[in-house]
Amino acid sequence: MTVFIQKGDVPMSVRQAIKRGLRHFNSDKAQWERETGIVMSDPGYMAWASQWLDDNQINEANNFFNYQLAAYRSAVARLAQYKVSLGRTEERELQGTGEFDTETGEEIMVEVVTISAIEPLDATIEQPVTDPETGEVTGSEIVPNPLIVADEYERAYAEAVIMNTPHQVKEFD
Image 1 (cartoon, helix red, strand yellow):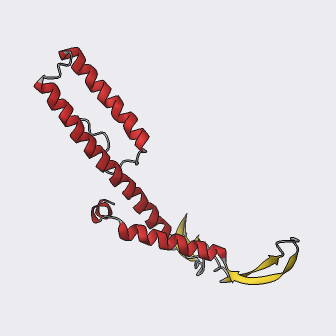
Image 2 (cartoon, one colour; image 1 turned 180 degrees about the vertical axis):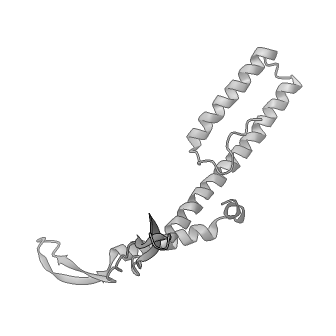
Image 3 (cartoon, one colour; image 1 turned 90 degrees about the vertical axis):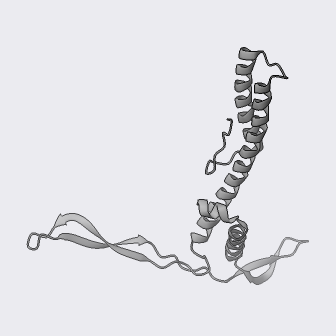
C-alpha cells in the first residue's frame, strides 16, 4: 500500500506530493520489474496498479484535509490574539522563589507579571493630505486607524475560515 500522506501531517504542495508519489511508485515498480518483468496482463501487477490509483486518491484527500487543518489551526491562533482596538490587561500570578520561610517552613511566594498590559490603539489617526500635483502637505484628515482596520479584517477572515472548516477537521484538532 502506498498511502504516504496521513491526516495531521504538514500539508505538501502538489509538486512535493507528486515527487514523493513518483519515488514510491518507481521504487515499487522496480520490484515488479525485477520479479516479474512487468507483464501487463499479469493479474498481480494489474491489482498493484489499481491499488496505486486508489491510494493516490487517499493521498490527495489526506493532503487536502491537512491544508484545511493547517488553515483552521492558524485561524484559531489568530483569534486567540488580543484585539488591538481593546488592548490587553496585565495578568499576574504567584510563583514560588525556591526559598523557604525559616519560621513557617512555607515557600516564599512573589507576584510576577505573566502577561504585560498593552494599551488599546486610538480608533482614528490624523493623516497628512498632500497635493498630488505639487507634493506639498496641504492639511490633514482624520481616518480610521489602519492597524485596527487590518486587525478586524484578519479576525473576520479567521472567523470565516473556522466557520467553513468541515466538522471532521475540527474534531481531529
